[in-house]
Length: 108
Image 1: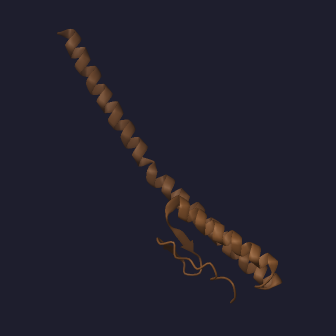
Image 2 (image 1 turned 45 degrees about the vertical axis):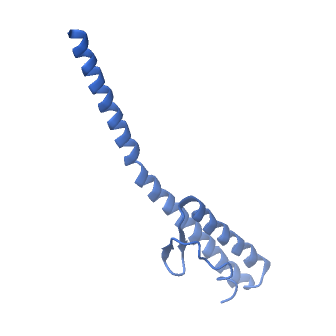
Image 3 (image 1 turned 180 degrees about the vertical axis):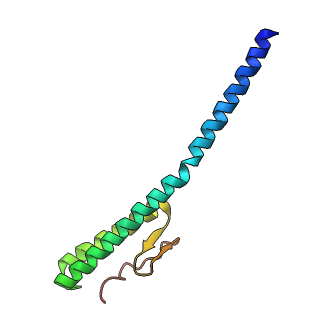
């Protein structure tokens, strides 16, 4: 009888620990996503800013601007691959479709 009571307590404790562990694991997910989104947004903002700087200094058709366009494309693709969203710095919004224009920063 005592052994059965100890087993019941052990089973209850095991279930409680598993439930608590599952809750803690899931509770960390939104924070990780928010951090990932923040990093993606910052990456795109920096790439967009660098492209505009290169264009202002060297012209929109310069090799420097072409290099920065590639970096902007890579930043957008990184966001898409990791979160299926990408930040549109000019529109100041997230896109949930892979609908960026590869040539949206060719000329202004």
